[in-house]
Image 1 (cartoon, one colour):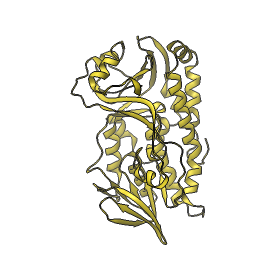
Image 2: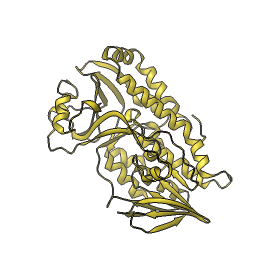
Image 3: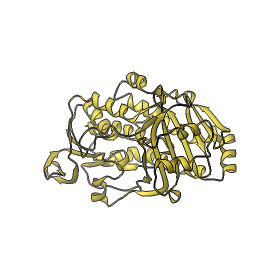
Image 4: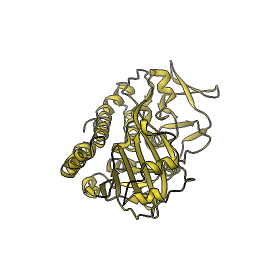
Length: 371
């Protein structure tokens, strides 16, 4: 089967590799003029590394990033609220890994053996034909295939033209950057203030991924200085990371968006990754869901014993799991938005139980369509 993939991000590259493993021919079209190696850091929980391990060897990636064994939450004045062992929770799935985003992209790129990637050209439309599908490109050309996989991100053009569905703002804006790990952070470490969150994760021996968010209504320009000013009262362990942050640092700022649940009825066109179900990053499942999507889709495409349409089977297989992640992400954002007294008391006394509730179902069997 010939697969046309729109987008060379994590979802698109993972889909191509999963299809290659199953013996299918893939062609990727990416609107950027080269590999998308920009970005800050990425955090993969155990279900994500379990999926990744079916596509690439984990050992080289582990050597370029950091294994995260513990997760800690502090108040903005530095008091420890909750700590738990990520190793213990995810041991039956896979290790929790943090790394520069470019490491994951390069790893997926290097493992592709037969996939052709065309940069500077996007898939902008889709039509069914008597023999398959026709993908229309941004330069006016077209390409025939058997299936189009839309992995073109939260602002997916293919989703917009086929369903009219656009992402909706969550009312939260965030900053992402990579900085020197001057605080020697060794765990996933979050600090919670009043309507503000600061997070740091070590991603190499001396670098940390730094994430900060607040209500969009409080943001004026999103500049680095505004970031430092808004979190100036945050103490140790993370305050010093912001204090030493240079104004010239590469900072990615933007409003968080969610892709509402939508229905695509165009057989021959399947949405995966953020194009299908982008949501708040509070569950750290963006990459994980994309990797899982790729594996499940490749399995369904390769199952010649079923005559049920690919789109219907894929939707049924992924719907419950994706809906759960979206629901839990909203719940975690609501918890962060509570008054500090209620929020901190809840996390201190119920933190383990809440984490187990959010994630235990994601440790279940990926391929049977249930948790």
